[in-house]
Image (cartoon, rainbow over all chains, first blue to last red; front, top):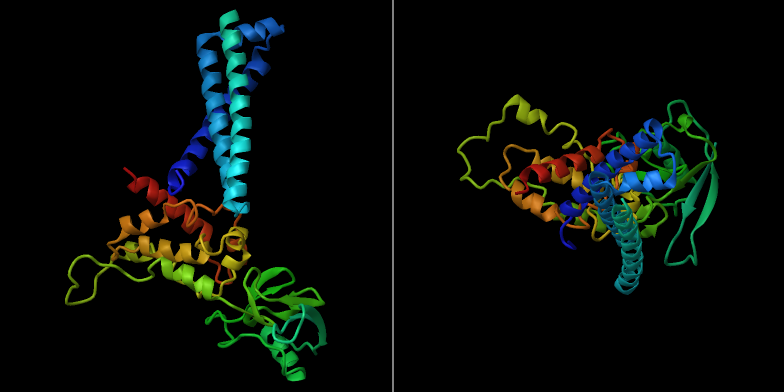
Amino acid sequence: MQNNGLKPWLLQRLTALYLAVWALVILGKFLFAPPESFAAWQGWVGTPLCATGFLIAILALLGHAWIGLHEVFIDYLHDWRIRISALTLFGLLLLGSGLWLIRAVLSATLLG
Amino acid sequence: MELRIYRYNPDTDQEPRMVSYQVEAERGMMLREALMAVQRQDESFTFRHSCGEGVCGSDGLNVNGRNMLACITPVEELKTPIEVRPLPGRPVIRDLVVDMSGFYAQYEKTDPWLKPRDPPPQREIRQTPEQRDALDGLYECIMCGCCSTACPSFWWNPDKFLGPQALLSAARFVADSRDQATAERLAFLDDRFRLFRCHGIMNCVEVCPKGLNPTKAIGYLKRRMLQESP
């Protein structure tokens, strides 16, 4: 990926597109059929179609954020040691956040 | 009218300084003429200029925080005192004269010449009017450097990111129906730095004295990459 500019650029736009569409789905849910309780919300998230949508959104968000951070670090962090350290730190942070989000969606699926 | 001009001689000065000069404004006076008037007051003041009509691209300067050509900028349109600095991000040789060799090196990397594969014809290579029109907005660049030196991505990575001027040139040859090295040119640009450091903030479009649109040219290159990618 280091020597290829088009793929990450394209991936960032595709993930942004998916996230925008998914955000509209969530917004629509809250506007037109708001859940009456947290349990109802969990139940909705836990349906197979919805859970799949959320899991793709989580992966899209992680990919989008990773590419975005990589871009910022390439721009501003010129010392490769600092850049690798920052990428490792934020990579772990993203990975941890992603696993936590996936766990939340899967637990809703199990409850549902 | 007051001009505040960046002065720096690396041989004698510890650090740069801004120096004020008074120049009598004349009707229709361009900034280049005002700078020449300053030069008559102080012969040690140095700046590049040549044609005086926005063609040679020698007198690109940063005026009141914006890059422009001094020779086609009427002083009456500028807020006074007029602050004149060298183009940003380039090493200063003296006063308003900067070292543009890195800028030219990036341009050279785009192989700015036609690369035909077929044997050259006996006569000129013909183009349809549409093929010729595709070059409009790409070939008119005078290489003043106003765009690339206004681009933060070029400031951060001037040796790796080609910059808007060189990318406009790259697009000019990719768009040319007579060129037969499109795949090679696009493969060269498919890199994390050369093209993709552009984040589309359009400073280049904002300052181009010829009204060109390097951001659009960069978008065209990305579109061609997508079309040509397997």
